[in-house]
Amino acid sequence: SQTIHQWPATLVQPVGSPLSLECTVEGTSNPNLYWYRQAAGRGLQLLFYSVGIGQISSEVPQNLSASRPQDRQFILSSKKLLLSDSGFYLCAWSAVQEKLFFGSGTQLSVL
Amino acid sequence: EDQVTQSPEALRLQEGESSSLNCSYTVSGLRGLFWYRQDPGKGPEFLFTLYSAGEEKEKERLKATLTKKESFLHITAPKPEDSATYLCAVQAGTNAGKSTFGDGTTLTVKP
Image: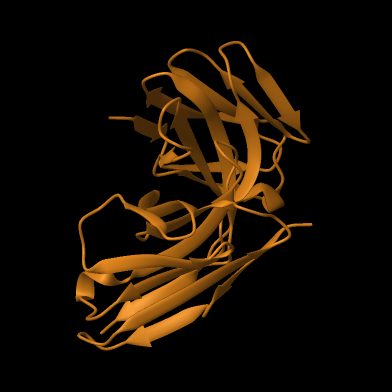
């Protein structure tokens, strides 16, 4: 069966520090991969999605970036975090145009 | 631009008191409408996919319905364990599987 792993669960970082969040999927090949961010009490905002290795589409201009070095690995990065980067970050995968399977999320606090 | 509006923002019910959650959407060429359940601090979990007006899906105390402009999530005789945030999302026919989410309805069921 398919599983998705996302870590860390909680992260507290100072303003201006770098960020790296990692997500891996098991049990499927060539999934679509997504990074979403959720503000408190709000819905999910799509940040990046990928349909294949090295193929990244950005939905929202910001100081975050994403990479897909392997078929089932998706990484969210920043060189210098801002206060506004705080939030709940979710990685997800899907088969093409199908339901999303989410990881457990990372609660990021930038102080 | 695809848009999803959910109402009410919050709903408090007594155990056994049935009600409905609303999801209104605007999308160019609906590919699918999705309902997810999200518990605090966790990633959303898939509940239903609806593809065309008139379609209905059921799972335990939940039933989802779809018209050309909105979807309803009916909750019959809810229990405290149904307390969660319910998210609605749409996929348009040409957006490569990207989902647009509403802000969710937070349901609290009191015993």
